[in-house]
Image (cartoon, rainbow, N blue to C red):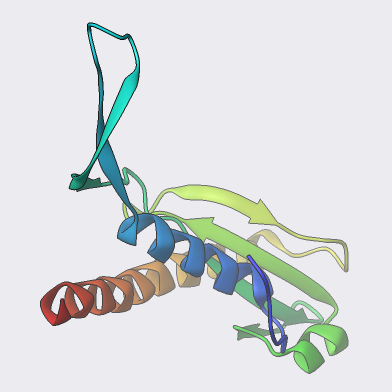
Length: 139
């Protein structure tokens, strides 16, 4: 994955792009020829990957454990006292938390960010599915 421009919040963008690419990927059918024991690829028969989980990252910039900004810009990231990325899946499960240094967060602030990440996951997945569906109908 190559980033052409950066104005903050790169991890969220990369996770969404990776998920979209995996959901769009199609693999050809592969069988093993019993006579030659070699793989034979049928490019006409393709199947989409089965994606079991749909993780979405939500980044936050925290200022003195009081103000929280979702989807911060590079400038907001540089001015914040703490950065946090929370990854959740479509079943509201917590997949990962990444906090690269900065000041500590209260348990309440961390829970607030997790709750916002769960809500954001639903919104992003809805948009992603809408885009994927529009690509199917345009083919």
